[in-house]
Image 1: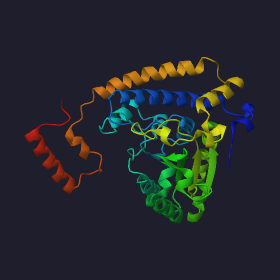
Image 2 (image 1 turned 90 degrees about the horizontal axis):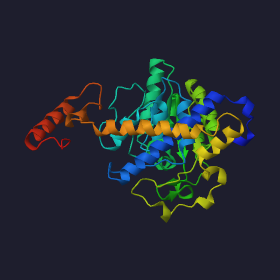
Image 3 (image 1 turned 90 degrees about the vertical axis):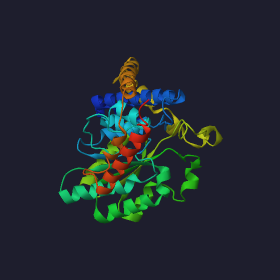
Image 4 (image 1 turned 180 degrees about the vertical axis):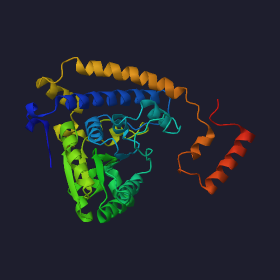
Length: 343
């Protein structure tokens, strides 16, 4: 299924939602640009850019209900920002500090760095929602490379069997590090893999935020009714896999259609301006506001002073005896050698 901007009547869309989508996309772009620059300055050890994927992530996040859970990965920063996670929290995480530095109450798991490990967790959250008879749904974000991991198949299989309220949101940006989609799977699409697990898979133009919003919104309705959905969002990563990667060695932009590689912010802004929904100052004003927010978040992240003991605080609601023993062992080590977080 494809839904593209050109087929939509601007008179039948929500102007307020469209402006919010564009504003959040611009904010996400500013975060990505500034975080990338900070990494190059040595401010953090590594960073996974997502330039070109803002429409996909922001639209999926804004389609979620307030109580819905997000199971993210290391590249879903735009999605987390749109959900309400403070910039400073994400920057702290990128510097190796505990992710939940603020007191925000966004229903979200910590970023998963191992590929696909969050997928069974998301299914478990959905099973818990069923057991507790709540109306919560879950969106599990992952890249196309995750579909080659066993966690993907196990998580989706359980979701199909137990009819969990989970939307599996696969952002297919064309490359799993240096592995192209053609070497990733022999299936015609990733969406069709849902057939093996007894539920629906759908493809969407991931650079059209209105299309992504509609598809994810409908998928969440289905999920709440007991039918999981696999959404394959077709987009394109304009930059490297991470800041330690060299995409010039493998990236092949010419093999993708123009709708998939065109900058999603430029594309959406042009359409909204033609429809009279935003003016020429909208993006510039959104960028200025995002720059101010980022500067404050960077300063806040730089003043963070976590304790070595923090590593134990977010593993379980109640610390296990084994973790308590490890905590005591670490405290003894710190007494001998000093806290490694202290300058």
